[in-house]
Image (cartoon, rainbow, N blue to C red; front, top):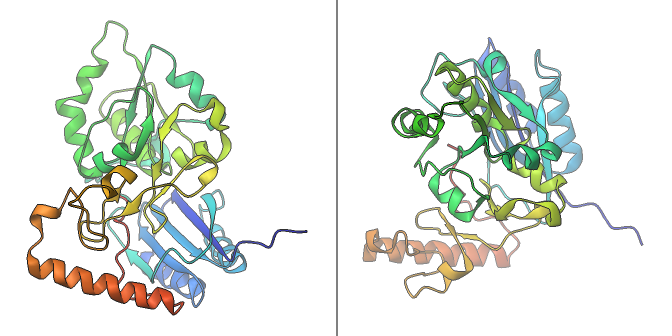
Length: 316
């Protein structure tokens, strides 16, 4: 018997390419998405970034419209299936950067490092003359990472330049400068980070094409150097090999991932707080969050999306 197609397709996409009229592109994307597609799309003069979800035909319509834009024919897209809609609304926004680093003079479209295909990634990062750097945030690295990777433990991507200038550069202080391999969730942050390192004078810089998501999608688990799960910025929270759903859930108080062990903590209250944020919640906060959780549960029982449900933090 044929397996019916998933009702929801998730598409994570980005591309660095010049956009002259951001307002016109924003309006075009907003129109293409409605009424079936939800998620977030960011538009900036440097390109597009976002994750959207909807029926497969609607996703194909949006992607076709994006690829028709000048410079976007080779749009990078990673797909996953979801049993239900992982987003509550559609947001198409204009931003100064499609991923915020705070380095306005970078041009990743022309100055990024060298792509490395997932099939070649293991050989690269196992080379003793390669320094592997995770460009994601601290809470993402806690969910999963490549074995042996350097963790900057930044709170946000905009902190990465300061980390490299104060700590990261020392990792490269060897008689023969090592190569640098960088990775992130979908490829966008490490692509921009490689452009930053090149602007700082580092030449042999590489980044994982398609990011962790493509690696997990295409690399057999038996051959994988990935440890743990990969945090994603939607209601799936985390995924594993084959992009199958992970075990982490989302704390509705601080919007951070919570592991199985974290949910066993006596300080964890479903829909309210976790170990990370329990001490910062007042009794009024707890009462408000409990009421929200109750409304979410009622809405779910009726097969409805609760408009006040909290999503995962945006990729930064």
